[in-house]
Image 1 (cartoon, one colour):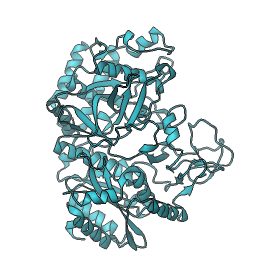
Image 2 (spheres, one colour):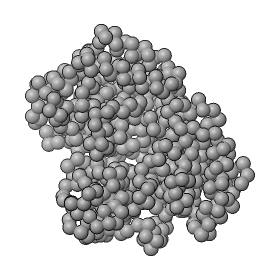
Image 3 (cartoon, one colour):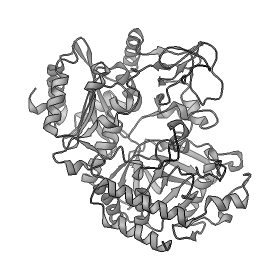
Image 4 (cartoon, helix red, strand yellow):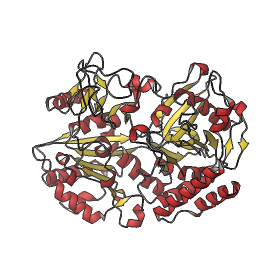
Length: 590
């Protein structure tokens, strides 16, 4: 294979040349250029059912819904086999696995030689972002997987709309995926940021194989964002509408297991009649400085690829409703009447349920019915709370950014940063304790901006980029830190969470619009008790005090843990990070 196949290409003729070269390498039985039509969806779905890739669910109960079972050894993001391939190791940084680009290309070329033999190569053109938006990026993914091709139809704006865009762009995202029979010994997810290219082999799991998501949507996009002066973030985007019709757009970064999707699709309790949350996106935000000096954001995706275990009618009624149709489920249980089931849903599993591997299951079985990482993929437009402005080419204006944490102690329920640099420091110091379903044992996991697994370049340069964004913003959004997982001495949550979090969002919006003040503390600006709307919520003053308590011994340990984490990163972090940490230590008199 010649070197041209691994370097940048542009224009539709270059797309054709690249596909021709990749086909010559992989030798597929045939090549299908996907057009995104409904007829194509029906045809590919029928082919996937015939091949056993998809199992139809009860089409009356869940129209156009299907179950996919992955290889048992291919059920999660392969972080240890995910690499950023930059010319120098320092550019990738200690936060990423690094491989030399030339040797990686050689290994991939060897593995891909003849790998599509007797298989179909699906060429999927797609757009990340609203069609026609200057924010949007266009790409093509090659894959031998019907599951991936059909999932890309859900997760991106794919087909003819992308083909039209390919005719007028100077560059496009090039992705190649091959299952290689899901052989772990030949599994690799490689990113080539300088070439706007990613390659995934040996896996058919969504977060590895759907290159539009983490590979291009976050890792390579974050690299491009630094080069071009914008931000690609692991954030949800929501709009909070007041009873008077005022909408405040908020971006929120929360580590895995901290309720990102639930927050983005929050349904307010009865006491908050007239308040509403609109969902722009639940996973990725691309943010640029607008001509008005504000931060504007788009969700580059067209669908949700979420954790099924997080969904029930209680925890997220909007999500429970949206997956009733047009959804591909992965690695969840199958009931005898053709429905899906997982631990945490609102009803017990019926007799004769089949587990995620197709085995008979009952409550006495020594394993879960659904894999803990069972997933769903469905279109954005299925969401009852889908934002009217979600497809706006210019995006939505971000007035506030929330950095969330999952901590049983130390971190208060909510606070506002003093200013931008202090807020960036709060985001850089983000941490969480694993949720119970992740085997949580109180061990704190550091995750700056919830981006540690997704930042496509050196974390030190990433944080410098965040600090540097302040000079470009005439009207920067306010930055907040939240933690609705704080517990009392008995280990019980102090805050009810879920829909009640709208009370915290209301305070955020009130601060944005200058409707309420805030108490200055050593760690940030906290709400006055009278400014938190607790109408209809049974929570006494002592519990509220505990939610905002600042304990010096806990913060001394927190500062030591932050220092240890950044020391372990062994990177040249921006000086402002140490300035902010020193200021906090002095304010706490530690």
